[in-house]
Every structure is written in structure tokens, then in C-alpha cells.
Image (cartoon, protein in one colour):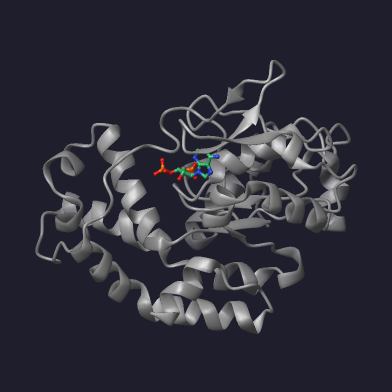
Length: 291
Ligand code: A3P
């Protein structure tokens, strides 16, 4: 029998089982064994009670801001790099561990957002252009979304990042593998834009938030912005920044048609998945499928 230091043991272990290098963090508060070895200074109350899940350009910032109005809801601190999004589950930050993640929450659940995928793709393209993305600046939206597999890598990357996040059925299926549908409240991004008061009413009911806030008192349509904005203490409109709710020309008809075809199969599957789990079909999906 040979004795080695814990560090040596760790190195040896990962040499033998390289697939284990990818950690799978679990909620320490659910697993008794984890809880026993967890520092007494840490509290389960620090982990979030609910998550908002949605790709870029589905209205996540608006929802974040509206939720913050409610005194019973505390949001995560902003990250210096990614602002209101912690971006823990989707990249390298995941390797920093659960303690790193917990630091984003002041004190003590899932809200996925799905908006019309074609609009999301177009909004995302506008976002990339506004951020000075070289490829988005040199190729039209139509060229990007219809780029063939023989196109340069960077163009294909942009095409994929524009199209794939809108395949909501794939993402939702994964969430439903691990969480029962009663724990997942789905928000129609289009409704969040057109009727945030009703959406916030339903979100509060789902989360059992008390006291119940009537968002009619806190949100008002701002005709200059073209969106609902928060009403400030001096009765002014406190709208989201310029990068949210941009003004750009409508999508051209050929792109509209292309995207309709592109998303059709997935949208049919999405509608079946939503019906199976007794979710309301979003307005955009209803329209899309009746076409
Ligand atoms: P556009 O700027 O293309 O219109 P996210 O914050 O997830 O990146 O989403 C940005 C989108 O949120 C905006 O895309 C806009 O359509 C939508 N949105 C929804 N409600 C809004 C609001 N009250 N004010 C501004 N943008 C809002």
C-alpha cells in the first residue's frame, strides 16, 4: 500500500478518469452528504429560488428589470463582464464552482422565455451589427441566415448563433428531462413586450410572491421608446437602454419566408411538447402554425 498526498491523488485520479474533469455541480442543500462537508459559514439561502432562462434578445433584461421593482424579489448582483447575466451554466464560469456562483446572490426556482424565433434571430443580427461585428457589417441578414456549409467559418458561426437559439423545443426538452413542468413557467417574449402587466401578474402568481403587485402602477407604455418602461419616482419614464428595443427596418419578405420554413418542423414539435405539458401556446406560435 502506498501513501500519496491529496494533490498527487487528485492528479492520478484525473489521469485515470479524464471524463470526470467536467464537474457536475449539484445543490449541496439537497444532498445530505454534501451538506455535511460544506462549510458552516455557507447558507443554502444564498442560492437562487428561481432562474430566468432565455437566449439573447428574448426580453430577459426587461423581465429582470421588472422583477426588481418588486420588494420581495432580490436579483443577482451584476457581473462586471456580462452585466445582469451571471453566465454560470453555459461556459467556462461553470468550472469556477458553486461558491463562485453563490457570490452573485445577496440572500435567498425557472422562467424560460420564448419569443418568435425569426424575430429573435433578426434582433440578434441587429445587436451584432450595433456592436461592430465585422461579419454582420459585411453580410446582409439574408446572406447570414442562408449561408451554405461551404461559407467561411465565421459566417457559418454567425448563422448558427442566429438560428440555433430559436430552436426552443430542443432546449425545453432538456429542461423538462430534469425538472417537472410545474416548476417551469414559460413566458412568451412577445407578450412581455405587448402586455408586461399581465405577464408580471402571472409570474407573481406562479412564484407565490407576496404582496401581489399591480404592475399597472409601475409600468407605462412610452410612445417614444415604443415599449413599456418603468415609471420613476418623479413620474418620468425609466426605459431600458438604447441597446434594448432598437429601431431597425422590418425584415424582408424572403427572409421571413426562409425562417418560416427553417423553424417549421421545430415549431410543430414545440407546440406538441407544450400541449403535452399543458402549457399555453404562445400567440406567435399559434399564428405561425395556422399559416
Ligand atoms: P430589440 O432591441 O431587437 O427590439 P434581451 O434583453 O434578452 O437581450 O432582449 C432584448 C429585447 O427585449 C429587445 O430586442 C426588445 O424587443 C425586448 N423587450 C421586451 N420588452 C422590452 C421593454 N420593455 N423595453 C425594451 N426592450 C424590450
